Length: 93
Length: 418
Ligand SMILES: Cc1cc2nc3c(=O)[nH]c(=O)nc-3n(C[C@H](O)[C@H](O)[C@H](O)COP(=O)(O)OP(=O)(O)OC[C@H]3O[C@@H](n4cnc5c(N)ncnc54)[C@H](O)[C@@H]3O)c2cc1C
Ligand SMILES: [Zn+2]
Image (cartoon, rainbow over all chains, first blue to last red; front, side, top):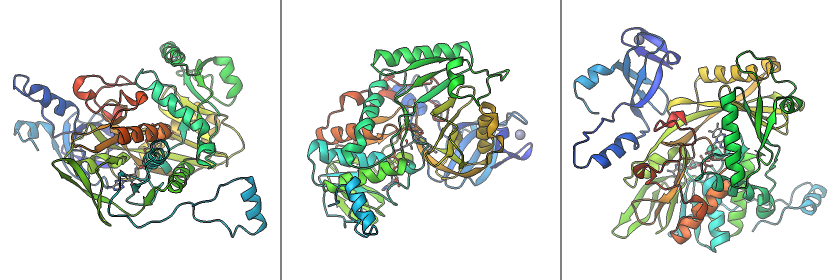
């Protein structure tokens, strides 16, 4: 598997550390349903059969956090963008 | 109905050219309705159906398998069985399983090559030793066997291991002599044959693609072979659990991850028991044919592809050679991958779901093979009585919400770190 890092180009995934699902968002602790929302945030996952948006850290390269879109059926990678762009845009999925 | 296997039937058949053997289980057409449906014909699903029939007298049971039985993880694992756990929720369950293994071949009249050759966890520093002592004590408190071996005792067992490794010297190990290995395919076939002989329909090439519900709960399943009705449905789908549960609108604390396994060319007896290397994540045993069977960590990222990447192959082989330098020129024959249902605390779930009549058996991570008999036993109990079995009481689905986690490794809500 090679991850196309926007800064370093295509690099073997051994240089990266996997964190997991990039679509979950920390809920507000002051919301009335905070307990249920935190349970979902910490524990439940879509675990899709197909495209998965996931966080990888380029530990052996530029030290950027990336959101990678990858197909869990065959490991084909569609693309990778800096996580800060995704999170700044407030995009949730 | 299949005839009993014995030394006499074997002799009789050898004398007449083995022409008298009949198929070990039927290939029935699905009936329109069943009292119980088990989704998934892996070890857990087949064991569940067998114990539903045997322990609870159920006579109208179907196992629905999307491929062929034994094609999933039950036929892909490294076959290790043991009950050397630490947490109170886990030890009684896995010990129940080990006891069932001990009598299984007689019970199901099938040779599963159960071999209690021992499981030895090596330790390489003082803190690992403390951990092994603690785990051994926890096992003793539950009446489970465990023995602390010192360096010289380990050296006698494993003269070929590298005892002079400067960073990871072998200081000793925790041995469970009742642990060992089992022929994994035989477990699927043996449970299938035994369940079939009690009237269970094993229906292969039958994928569940929908779960129908009404106001009273679950009604039945849509399959590639049509609708099949049942008010009691158990899911035992291992790596595909999230997909099947999503058909009923459930979202689970589970991710699917990939684990690889490896077999070497056949060698003379070298590895006398199951050995785990404490300095990394590596385990090895030797099959009765002589091949070394070994594995390591999961590939770390979500996956439904039953094949892994090369860096893990390299890592696993490096660890093997670090422990046993003499393996460096042994040839590896085969490797493969399986998809596991990694739960958020590394422990399984055997429980009801939010849908009445729909039950869940999942979260086995990469340790579910040893659990096969007890998992079937307890899941059958839950399906038949709607009550959790005593030794599986801790495996609740709501434990993640209530904080009653069973996290053996203490690694938190990261499925790939368990
Ligand atoms: C490489 C590897 C090594 C392992 N080593 C060990 C070990 O040494 N010791 C140990 O204890 N455990 C080990 N495990 C874990 C163990 O194999 C699993 O936890 C256990 O086998 C899972 O239960 P099962 O046998 O029921 O799964 P499976 O055999 O995977 O059964 C699940 C079945 O469900 C079917 N299914 C899925 N979706 C559907 C659907 N929609 N409709 C119908 N059927 C469906 C699948 O086709 C499959 O046959 C290992 C796993 C792997 C992959
Ligand atoms: Zn980079």
